[in-house]
Length: 301
View 1 (cartoon, rainbow, N blue to C red):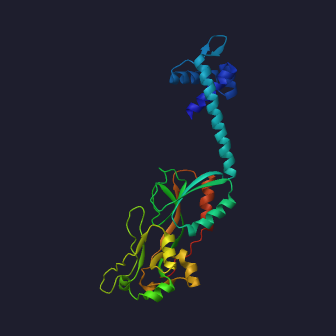
View 2: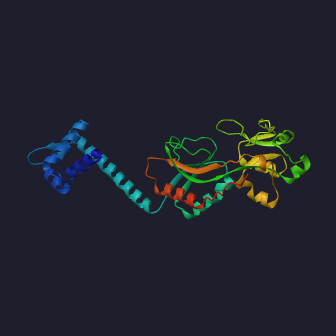
View 3: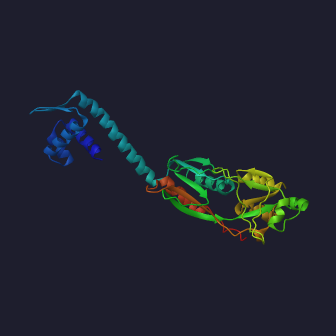
């Protein structure tokens, strides 16, 4: 800020050709103006003015520096005007990373675009662990662990996961009564993109304390594939409750081993870099999600 103040003093002296007049315009003494100019010249290592008892004129270096200084201050003034304007109406590009759960967020994002047409959404759908700050995201929506000392967090809700299969599959292959029965079934699994590990189904251990190990008939890294395969009778899948509610209500899917799934809730939230004053576009996005993203209480298991 001291450098910017020095530029303003320099421009005022260059335009008035007088320390006295420049000081009067800026509300300081001519002596103070002279000292500021001298410090600026010392820092730059060049003389900006030719001084005499009668006049002050720019040197060649001073004339060059004046043109650059005017452009710098003009850019700053333009930026201030844009920020002042944006404070009243959220606008500009908003870069957001979202998980691969489009059925939950896509309708809401469309509604956000309708309500804020001046905001340009730049959306990246991925379940990998992105670095919000290093990769330049304004915000991320994520499930699971929501704590990060570098980020501010707003919790949006929680959901559970259910084991489901189609009535056709259960009619053909039978309905498992215990986790151990899954050994004879086709099981559709999820692989975490960040680690490559296959998701562990939250099943209660058997009477002997042994953990069930469902066989693998298919592995993928998104929700839509498992939902599609389950609906088409290809096996049993573990899926978020919000993506199977309609299919369960319509009878297109049925819950499996409900009493053998451990009670659990998976958090959903929006995160953004902390320590920054949120821009109007970011505030609008976070507030909109908080007000409209309804994630019902997890289905009782």
